[in-house]
Structure formats: structure tokens, C-alpha cells
Length: 233
Image (cartoon, rainbow, N blue to C red):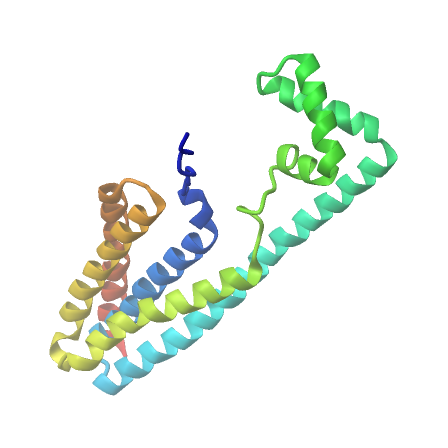
């Protein structure tokens, strides 16, 4: 009898680590750099000053994103390691109590007391710390903190996102920079919201409208500030 082909499943949760950092970085890159360019342009800055501001924003923003993500995710990683170390000590000092605790978790999930005790016993015989990390602490390979991955993904995606409005400012005559960067950046943000939602399995229309709305609001506020200060300076 022919064997059925192996069933392979792919879940979007496997992408959450790098997807969150990448979408956040690209969105921040587009929005902060375009807002910076628009603010300088509405303040009657020269074309060269607009480009300098955009390039400075790209470099500083990418480094800031990398450092921020690394520090933040490293803190999460430290907490995970501390929890695992504490769990390892508890398994060494009170293994029977930890086994009953694990069985209690399975009872709450729907198993009867006898079956839950057997499952806990067998899982702990194979990998006690892994069983407690997964079912008591909620830690797994999928959601484990990866500081370097998050930092690199954020920095790279920020740089790519920031390069888009910067490129528009570079090729657009000075008198049209505000409109060109605004329209292009909103289009980039809408596309990013759509792609991010599709990749993560979320509602694409809702994500696109959300990111476009907040992007337009941020650019409008920055343009207003630039216009006001441009008349004073």
C-alpha cells in the first residue's frame, strides 16, 4: 500500500521574530525620513540641505534602530535565561513537585488527572527542562529572543525604507520635493502595510489603511512645523 505523502505545515508565527523587526524598521525609515525631508523643505531649505538632512536621518535612524532592538531583545533574552536557570534549580531540588505542577497544567488544558500525570512523567523523563520551558514558561524555538537577528533586520529595513523618500528628493526639483516625497512615501507605506499583512496572514486592507493614515498625519504635522519655523528663521 502506498504511503501518504508527508504533510508539511507552514505557520506565520514562525516569521514573527524577523517580520516584526523588519516591518517596524521599514515603516520607521519611510516615515521618519520623509517627514524630516518635508519639514526641511517646507522651511525653505536648499536642495543640498534637504539631501543632507535625509542622509543624516537614514544613517542615524538605522544605527538607532539597531541599537534599540538589540538592547530591547537582549533584555528579553536575559529574562528568558534567568527563568530557565530558576526552573533548572527547581527541577533539581523538587522534581516531584515540578512534575505535579506540569501535570496540573495539562489537566487545565483538558486531560484527565491520570493521563496528565502519565504525560508529565514521560515528557520529563525525556527532557524535563524543555517540557517546563514550553508548557510552563511559554518558551519555544519559535519565539526565542534573537537580539542580533532583530538588530540587523531593523537596521537593514530602516535603511531600505529611508532610501525610498531620499531617492525621490534626490531626483525631484526643489519646488516639488514636498509633494513628490509625500505622495511617494504614502504609496510606499501603503505597499508596506499590504505586504506586511499578507506575509503575516493579517487583514491587508485594514493594515494598509492604518499605516497610510498615521503616515499622512505625521507628514502633515511635520510640514506644518516646518512651515511655521521657516517663516521665523
